[in-house]
Length: 396
Image 1 (cartoon, rainbow, N blue to C red):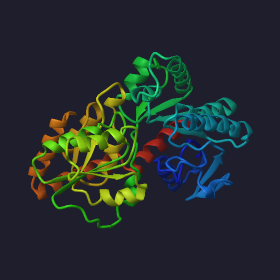
Image 2 (cartoon, one colour):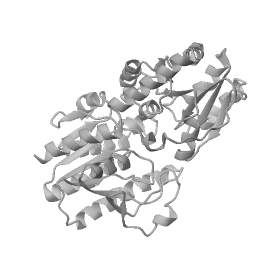
Image 3 (cartoon, rainbow, N blue to C red):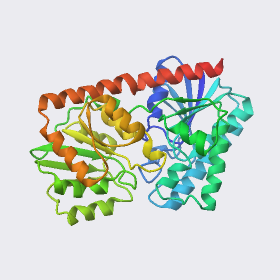
Image 4 (tube, rainbow, N blue to C red):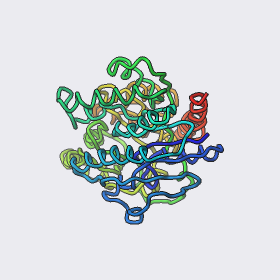
């Protein structure tokens, strides 16, 4: 197949779309990617990419359009979204290459899909959307935009139109289907569950011992936002009876509240904040952890989905503490390698103490179960084969 992939983010930005495209090339397909110049997580366009329009990365032809860099301000984020929306469509208008199928991974923002929709309209090519971030639900649940606002209503209509223009929608979590049917009222587009794989696969072989405190070391790595519940950790740790150190890597809108709670509950010696770290650096810490922590606030449709962090953690082959509901809870129970808890500080503390009471041989078994579950359900090769089959079916 000759495949056009449309996604605002691509290597060296850390997103699984890069892994999928390279796997498709290994399977014998010609893959062209329409993306922006790398800036996500860097606060600026990487210097070496400022003049790069086209490049070949591990067999994938990557076409980069101009984009306004995203930093910590809301204005920069809006400019970033709109610049890719505008310039990716401009690229499609000038494109003369005929592809067999268009595939787009729908991360935030949903406007990523616009260029794929335009290509479909121009050439009559079937368009497959892989939705791993629900819009406009995502901007509502984080508090960025209020549901009763005019902006939300505009985003609702825009999202619905873009999703409806797909020939098939792949969803990153089973409960997404309820949102498409009940909220967006999309019932005329085929929908199939195809989860995300993990970015970590390429780095799991690294052996970089890091000196950690004695006792049990639990890590959380990622966004410290409104739906991750990280601000509950200091209170939970104040209730933990065992010798435990809880490490947090990352940053977000709730970072300050999290740091204030560390002082409030007098756990400066038990909760260690490492700040944000580059992806490769953070992995060095996680491979040395005794256990990993994942949580997702039980609110709205997003709260019932599979956190990408859960699939990532499974690939480390470590025991996990999970404060989850919905689809995430279902997987946590199926793996038999997750200590499940409710979302209040007391329940999290009990889960941590429970993990500490489990003998090492059984903890090793729990970790192996998690890795096996990942390999059989979420590995990049497994998921890419599923995507390949779906793209073939759309061509037929």
